[in-house]
Image (cartoon, rainbow, N blue to C red; front, side, top):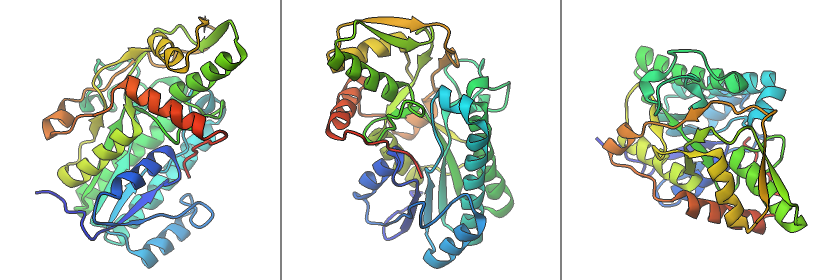
Length: 317
């Protein structure tokens, strides 16, 4: 049966981040009351304030989108922060949701939870079957723990807690700070700088051979709402395009969007990360949801937002 969001109090963590902001936009179309709390009001990494906030506001639904996120550089540079903050926030939010009888919770995982050498495309059954990609294992371990927390509370207490595993999200509100940016934001920013400065070449990390699955953030927000309404099971479910593009192809596409005509220089001294990271979208499509934004359309919209919002970082809180 469809889970009805009408007249529900929906708490979105990380509402100032890229995904959280998209969720706020999407939930405007639902007859629900959206709750949020900035970090200076509620520190999700501390258990006591989280439980006090839940006791006071009593949300009916929780979407846990808050996370410390970043690309390969940030994951390598700050492993302690990545594992601690993401473990702490997931633990506190999920436990408080059980304690205060939240009707439904959705935890947002990440594609890096899958083993480095898992069969492609990555199916939900591949979780915990082999070692992780070393460049982001700290973040991945925290996200796996969140998925397992949802399963544990569901198994022991009968909670309707679910988890989704999205492809690499991008779009308005993305984090363009060099030390934290994921591949699309990083390439888009540097391509724009190279275009303005008429730089003859754009440096791209790695060989350009790895292939990735991307999802536009407003599509992801729509999929999250759809899963809240239509999905209830212990197993996580993938959200992605089911197709991939190489980093080299992506870089050329971004250069076309920006209008940059220089050459690409691949810095092979930098790590590639996982060679392939494409999600199997079969279960998602069988439920009846498919993304509506092509990669080219999404990049165009992201670029327009970037130009219209100079200096915006889009960090999750």
